[in-house]
Image 1 (cartoon, rainbow, N blue to C red):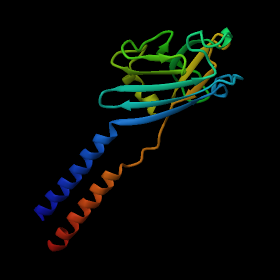
Image 2: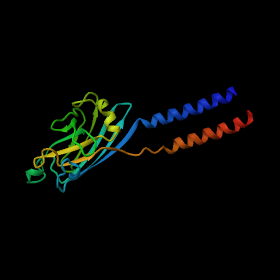
Image 3: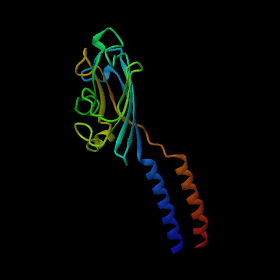
Image 4: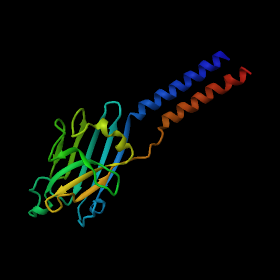
Length: 195
């Protein structure tokens, strides 16, 4: 019986370690539009964002794309579509919240932010002590889908497009399932012999 207990313990430990290695990255998405602003804004501008939270390194990679707005003031002659700020805010859908991290005006990402105004993309990483509050201070709100990205313009200073940051559904990796199946196949014959 002691050998069986050790075998079960080793199999469970393998599964736990394999799950923890994969669980350190959590993926999020956001679709930005004027109708998510509070109050709603009528605009043809849209955007999207992809975010990767590394719970071990405590960092959030962001990749934001914007269509219909001018990131540097030189992509269109209409100054009303000039972006004046891009920020992460803490609040659930339908509510406004305080800024936690500035991507543009202010820029809290001091080491790796990249802006391509022609493509309308902004990439970077929120890590360390960057921001008005640190990322670790905001993990609970992020995991509860109570975080959003807000793009401000001259025409809409409170925000022209906004997108709630939503966690993707976590699906087990196939290799975890194979490891579980292997552990079961390894344990069952030994358990039958010990009876």
